[in-house]
Image (cartoon, rainbow, N blue to C red; front, side, top):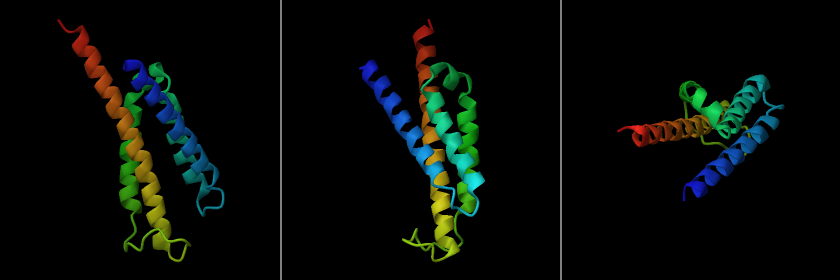
Length: 130
């Protein structure tokens, strides 16, 4: 069972890492591409970093810090008037809604990764405690 869970975690993080790289690759025509390419690439790198147990354990607080910053960014980016995502960029509110939800997706993934690391740390401590 542990091997199945480890394999699932591996492939889920690999999947999200690839998805975030794809998100970054379509940001070149955005009005502010550098910000979004950096954001999605950083999230992808953290997903790939999670595949390496040593990296993700050593820098687990980076996951929490980055997820918190992305959550704040998502809140600040939320449109003043919700008009949905829209099929076309009719208004700035459509763009803000999409950007806000993109940041929120990144944040949720990183919060989940941090939570799993904390859970693993707690279990390891309980197994070594007398």
